[in-house]
Amino acid sequence: MTGISGCLKKVDLERWRELLRKRGHWSFPLFTDGSKRGAGGKGRGGWAVYSPWDDGLSCLGTVEDTTNIRMELMAIGEAVRLGRRLREAGILDGGDSIVVYTDSQFSICALGGEYPKLTKNMDLIERIVTEMEELMWDWRVLVNFVWVKAHRVAVAADEKEQFMWFGNKEADRMATEASGPKD
Image 1 (cartoon, one colour):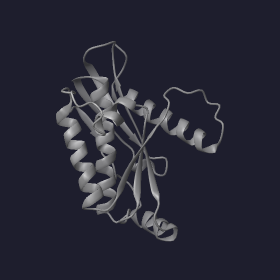
Image 2: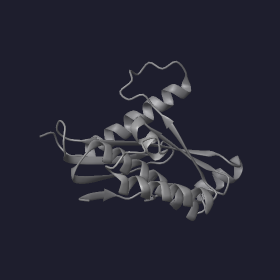
Image 3: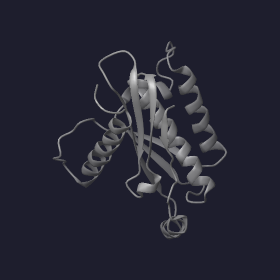
């Protein structure tokens, strides 16, 4: 990994704890995306996790010689790890959940075991599944996935769709930025 901008930087933890105490159990949205420069094969890639609630929770990273799918999976893995750090910091309580929004149907299906003959990226898939299970069973924080159609137009049917479109667009912008300048 060439670069990473860490999650949970410059975050006002007390403000978050107070907000969540008032709200009871809730779902914490995290938008993820992966990007790779160049067509096909391997190249320089970037991943991003965007938090619409606090820029200090957003993070991104850069990887050399990688694939787009691996970057999509890495972004999801970072979102799951962020969920654990939020629980460790007392921001999330047992019974709360993180909602991972992604435009990668493949990643959601791969993490759900829908591709039994899959061999590529199994190291990463197995690590993410293990981390999700630990977060859910040991820390009692649920992990939910929502697929977002990528590269939608800005016109949305309702507020929820507009929220998903904006979050996906921001995660896409960050991941593209992390993958570096165009070749």
